[in-house]
Image (cartoon, rainbow, N blue to C red; front, side, top):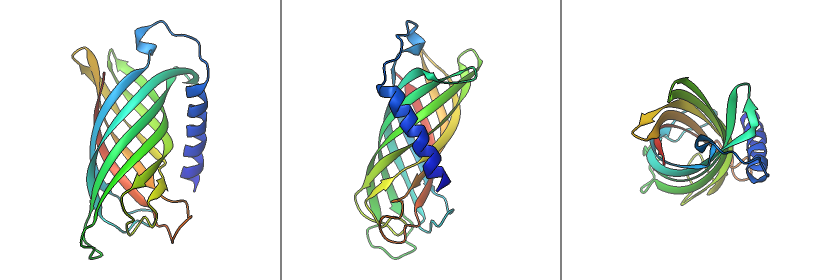
Length: 194
């Protein structure tokens, strides 16, 4: 419940800044960028999850620096992400075709910290919605909320920047249908800015 509340507040704040009028930033580094990501992972048995699922996904992001999200010396960024997620169940519950495809949307805040030149770390968090092709043991609803937290590193790749990290995605209907154990998925992610 706390994770839902914190992620919701962060997402509402990020969305407010994303649609608000900010001052123009002349430096190219501060302009909006697009990112492409690929990720793979599996469910993590915590907070009621029972279904062993593994899968992969693809995501596209639009990221823009927002001076009003600054935290100490780190400028904040508003991240809008759309993703596709394909998972397969572990067969524990004897379901004959336990394959789920889902589309999701996330609103996040991201903070980057440069360590040496174009090398550094990032942290991010937010919330979104996901629509799945079918219900599962842990998800008795096809429409679910998705609070998330993650982090990782970035590094130079040619004339752009590569990213690698880890993300925890909590998928839940918030108790609106069934007993709602929820699904906690841990993803390894790799992306590039373009």
